[in-house]
Amino acid sequence: MPEASTPRGSKSASRRDFLKTSTVLAGGALAGGLSLARSAHAAGSDVLKLGLIGCGGRGTGAAGEAMTADKNTRLVAMGDAFEDRVKGSLENIKRAGKENGYFGQIDVSADRCFSGFDAYQKVLDSGVDVVILAETPHFRPQHLKAAVAAGKHVFCEKPVAVDAPGIRSVLESTEEAKKKGLSLVSGLCWRYETAVTATMQKILDGAIGELVSIQVTYNTGTIGGRRRSKDRPETEMEYQMRNWYCFTWLSGDHNVEQHVHSLDKVGWAMRDEPPVAAWGLGGRQVRVDPIYGDIYDHHAVVYEYANGVLAHAYCRQQPGCWGDVTDKFFGTNGRASVLGLRSDEFRIRDRRGEVTWKFAGERNAMYVAEHEALFKSIRSGKPINNGLYMARSTMLAILGRMVDYTGQRITWEEAINSRQTLAPKSYAWDAEPPTKPGPDGRYPIATPGVTKLV
Image 1: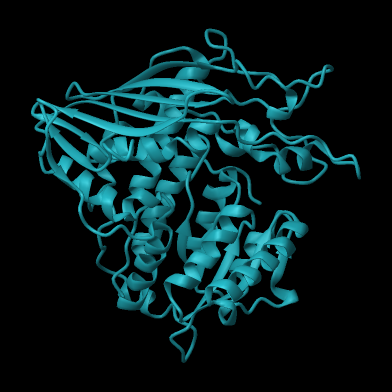
Image 2: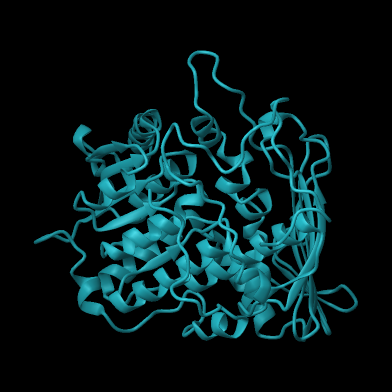
């Protein structure tokens, strides 16, 4: 895998420049470059050949959902850093294919199963038309850049980066995809779910008046944590990559990897305009075992917007605690609930608390719907590009981590222009990862008031 991307030249990526890159509403169709989009089909056929990069649970699921979405697709190549993950994923995909009717769409031969740090490039070189990027988040900017350079349409899982240089790389790839007429669909799946999109549209249309504040939560139990193998020796690089969720350089921390779904709704409601600044608090209170790497177990962040709106974002991964995954929007004329209790979600209420609207339509399978949108755009020659909002929403999450790790109030411009790259010096199984354990086996943890913004 290549080194982490850095911005071209020395010009800073200001908040204004970041906004200027937006030319369409989130999820909208893009014109131009249609010849490339049309030519993405396999020669002489309407079959679209799929390549899977990243063969963990999410990638395995995404491959099946892609084939469910379009019966004229074929999975022909797979790649992952770990050979056993490729083999295990293919077995699971075949098993699910038999159960769900897409077994005949699986055409992955042994010579199109790739492993190692360069597996992504081998998938791209295997003759595929569309790639599913579902590898560990750290590698997404590099893989997206390579996929667009190779002229492939892309389904890109969330989050799309773990640091600001990665976000700047994704923005460059987004623009390049536009120029080439390539479709780029994001795995921020709620933007393709019927009940959520209908409720969010009501908010955008002014059903609760002018927005005043937002509260989003993603409080769950523990995720991640893996002990070292007792069966065979592992290098530190291998151990961390197999335990990727628990290392900031690989996952971005859980407020980036998971809470990005909630923060995406914040960005959506704010019409994808970045905040002015953010501040917050967080820490590592319960998950203190070294198996949990160097990530926090709770975050709380306040995002300050230019129009006075404050977005309050909370996430926690601690066992035995009250769980809550909700999105609430408060306006001058009422409030809206997107995700929440069954008695409250997908509803608009006036200032007295009376329900004035609720979603009454049919809910769809959003994980399939996002792939349906991708393939429809390719076949129609009308590419769609979700790159801008997926970059903004991921950067919201990265900003939240920055303010919690440092204990400082940080502006959007300071964050997006950060020089800190979380990449290792090289990618090899015997290379040193960016963080390593001390003599007691514990990893250094960010300390508010001590850790600095780079």
